[in-house]
Length: 348
Image 1: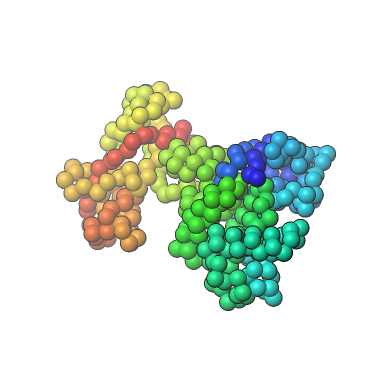
Image 2: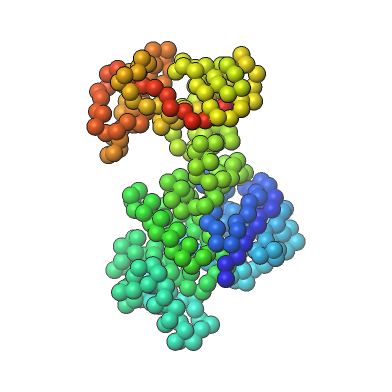
């Protein structure tokens, strides 16, 4: 049975230190959410409060419209039927894989346990490893077993605390996609905590960007990247630069890169100075363009180069170009803008 989760104006912390400030979000049954932010922003405290390890100072947490945390009430963690997957896997090294998965199934008969163990090992793609010990498995395999163990008792909600942070960068995103597929197959409501945006993009339906104990924006990865609500989100999600601009009309601004037009209305009067976000994919390498810039730095990424460019005005931008366009440092290359919509901030 999958459940919905509601967190309403939650304040929480440790001893006399308040960590969370008015945290609010909801997950529908079967939806995967993510708390994304830098170290120390409070995202793990949110997870601990949902699990019941930290009481609510103010506000409340509801599972299926039933209050499990409030200022006056805190349902014990063991009564919440919440599964957890930890950063260090927390597998029992002296138990075989099947007995690790069996750990949360003590209320079932042996036959029921075996059926569920075999079912979970098949779901995580490891039916042949039932008799193996954790030390005989790779990090990715151990994480799959940790997931199988957490899902075996059919928890109402699954919490994942930085589950891929000990793995290679390439493996993280792959595992995030695999875990998402498994959670969707099991129709589980889940909440992931991570500081890695690629993990968040690969796994979550809804992402909450956190900083200093508050949620700054909630939305899909696409919306956070293309429609950041403020400068922190714009800087934390993806890459880009913020350059000065002058409002020319309700849908256009003038910059050192030329006039940029978008599909949304600008909430500023013509003639006002504003700042505009330019992402690397907004700048196109074009040898036939009249506009050009000097290559200051470059980073090879396999399929493409990320170029750091300086305009004649001194403005610096980034540009993604296919990797067969291999230009040297200090070389001048042609560029043009390809901006679909404007991301505007008032001048600070």
